[in-house]
Image (cartoon, rainbow, N blue to C red; front, side, top):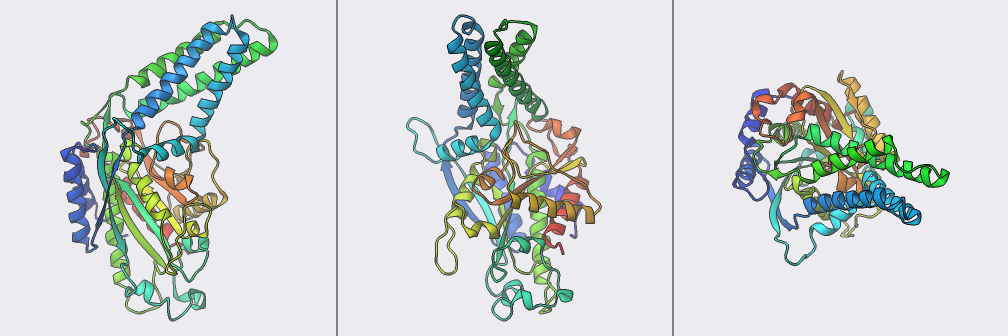
Length: 444
């Protein structure tokens, strides 16, 4: 990848304005991305949508219900043991369902686009650019004349993603995503995620403690119980009263991701255009969709909208394939860039919580780790994701192959605050992630 750190930083600086969904800054960011796509030479299209801003209602409602049930468990279970057991099971189902991930994704996705009375809808849009555009591109012109399988291996580089495809005569669609909106919170991400983890650990400990007490007829109240209840109540109330505002420039989150996405669009377009009829073509058989998603901070709304539109995709034979377990999913890959503006560790995750990754997802992660090793990089895959959401969630929940790349360092602690400004962005982190993604796309 011919990486221009100055150009990437210019993109970051241009986008680093408070731009929460519905604000003037969001419109300014949209216009900038549209103009950048046009400058690259790829005509963008806009997909507008309206949605219910329900993420805050769902999260605060969940916190309130858990805290009320926990308080009832502590003060009523000594007098009503059966009620205590019922409360324990209820809390356990709620907490495990949240940590599991898929139930939350399903709930948010189901309610976002419903008609809900007395709830004011917000509007946003996805900005998408596709390359190659049509059948006259070099990558696609070979398709009607000879099979990829007939090409001498020594004459070309075959994308590692093709090994996942169901049919090597069809395009593999690669979606490279980055959300362009931002938000600020009274607690930065680096504090909020530990608080979420403290809440869930203390709640699970309390439920286990009460179950053991009921089973072994032990005293319900004790030092460990009081400490755990205090931790759960304190962390839960702190999270409940966290306020969301529009004062963060959002340089790391996520102007850096949009900048890398634009750099990838430019590099891939030049690579495909530079193909002069030779059978050597790095991205042969791949069709790229570069998507700046809107309203990510409001509940991954742009990603959910894109997931629905991809799910209604029609094949060249005009057979509409839905987003259930159909072969279509094997030819679609989603690479999300979220917070890649630091020199810290490179993280790549396909998880939505504790929900285990599919075999295909594990194979994709193995391909990414192999490409990283060839580039002299190290990629970390967290065993679970709790307390944060990313745009790969809707796609993983629907059975697609999807991952999110992030870089994590101490500077990441200031995400969702007014200190997330261009001055804290490190171009080296964006460059490493960009080169790694190109290596994945062009893996042998």
